[in-house]
Amino acid sequence: MRILNRTDIRALVDVAGLVPAIGEAMRRVSEGKTDMPLRSMIRVGGGNLFGIMTGAMRDPDVHGAKLLSLYPDNPTHGRSSHCGVVVIFDAATGLPSACLDAAELTAIRTAAATALATDALARKGASRLALIGCGEQAHSHIAAMRAVRPISSIVVWGRDPAKAAAFGRANGTEVATSIAAAVAEADIVCTTTPATRPLLERSMLHPGLHVNAVGASIPTMQEIATAIVPAVTWVTDYRPSLEAQAAEVIDARRMGLVAPDFVFTEIGEVLNGERPGRTSDSDVTLYRSLGVAAQDLAGAMAILALARAAGRGVEVDWS
Image (cartoon, rainbow, N blue to C red):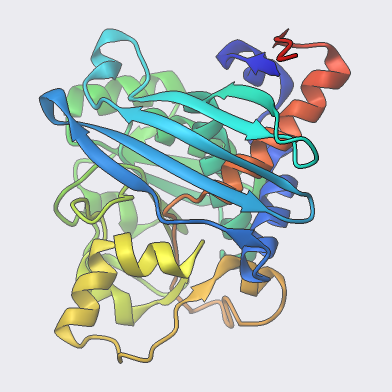
């Protein structure tokens, strides 16, 4: 088994480099070539969370799991809020083949998945980016958007003005005084927060906009107002996750804002040409990211191949 820490992963791959592997994974998801139980989450001391994501993928054959602690206060102490490991297993022998730092892999694969969806859904000339949130994912999403679109201006909004200002100085971005102001002139919006109440309202949308809703991955979190659900071209990573874990979709179903038989589109279906994404420059498109095990598996496999070629990481002999 090869062990790869945060430094190893950063030395081997960036967001743009992981996009092709994530794209293939999302195609496999929509082709029915993955087995992915919904993530399991439990609360641990101090309002923190511990989650388990398991999965298996065919073509290439790989199975594994992510064990992840979510400690929201960690960044104030210089640590990632996401702490854990991703372990992948050899399909032929069942032996563990790699153990990777989950925080770094999650950050890169999440941003790569967003880049993939943005490339498929945003207008080709989209150049103005608005970031809602100024944490770890906001940083990685700057690189993600620049990998697929000619980003010429970036504006950020954060709940804490001091943190937003610090983010702006560090990344050369403008700082907005409100979410509405940040979104008003944007071509692309990325929401990357742990919000428990909606931040993006339907009234803030305008023709041609593309939204990446990234931060809320469990039903107790919500960045996107429920009223937005029927108002946009909605695309997600994995329908079962969306239906069970996206608060705005659960509420829209309950309130009758979308029909009971309404089928949300998966990004893999758009990539495979099975369902449409953006059909005109005036469409408002939204990619709802929940994060799935197939992305972790594909990302880990791609990084493992690079690590073996570079002789990077620490090997442990299980025999």
